[in-house]
Amino acid sequence: MLKILLNGNQLETEAKTLEDLCRSLGYSNDKIATALNGEFIPERNRQDAVLTRNDKIEIVSPRQGG
Image (tube, rainbow, N blue to C red; front, top):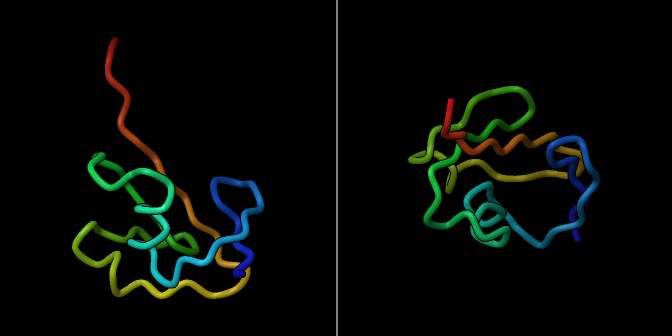
């Protein structure tokens, strides 16, 4: 298990990449923005973004409304 910080909360995961993490959290078909240790990671690069212990990950989904 890998310990990471996700949106400010500690999480243990077996995900190896940012793409794996998003999929395991149920974001497979959602439009989201992701950052790894403060760096924006586009959707096309998530599979190449390897997770390591104590990484700080932000996942944000767009809001609708006014």
